[in-house]
Structure formats: structure tokens, C-alpha cells
Image 1 (cartoon, one colour):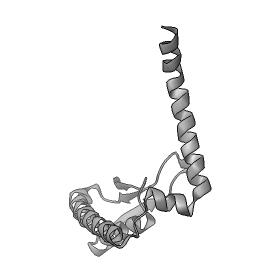
Image 2 (cartoon, rainbow, N blue to C red; image 1 turned 60 degrees about the horizontal axis):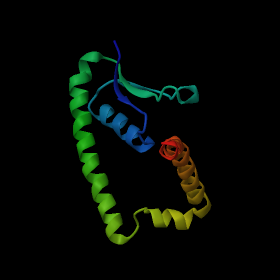
Image 3 (cartoon, rainbow, N blue to C red; image 1 turned 30 degrees about the horizontal axis):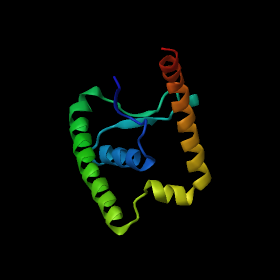
Image 4 (cartoon, one colour; image 1 turned 90 degrees about the horizontal axis):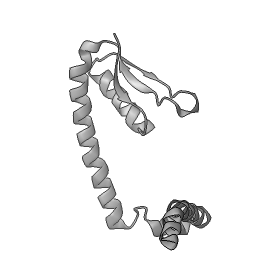
Length: 123
């Protein structure tokens, strides 16, 4: 019976491809399912044989630990070199979008706090 190894929600195409290659390298039979319509399901990487799960899980855990270290090192390097994305670089690159998002956030906060302000005035 098949068993899901990795849910592909919030997983980059690069990472999904690397995980599939890792399973291929170790002779673990797997297949991928695409995301469903309207984003209801995210898709996944599935093992054909459930008995491969402990070995595949150990490989995946090791891969994810190594990837985490690599990505953090890349981010630290980008920060040192001034290439890391910050609020100010986003504002510079996409000023209209950033201002619209800030306005929407302010509007949502206003709606959220309006009843509290009204209660404070009436009491």
C-alpha cells in the first residue's frame, strides 16, 4: 500500500525534484501527485511500498537538515553582501504593491479594532 512521504504544500519545485532524485538514488520506488484543482490538495511524493517508509523518512530527515543548513548559509551570505530581501528593498522594487498591502493591513486592523474603540467610547 502507498504511503505519503512528503506533502508538497509550501515546497519549492527544486526541493521536490531533489527529494525525488534522492529516492531514485537509493532505489526507493515513488511517484508524485499534482496539486488538486483550486488549491484544495497540495500534491505529494508517495512511496509505492509502505515498508520503505522508515528508510525513506531517515533519508528525507537527513536531506532536510542539510538543506536547512545550506539555505541558512546562503541567506547569511546574501545578508553580508547586501543582497537579502528587506522591507526597504521590496518597497523600492515594488512601491505600489507594497503600499497597497500596507493599506490593506491597516484597513483590516481598523475593522478589527473598531468595535473595541466603540465600546471604550460608550462606557
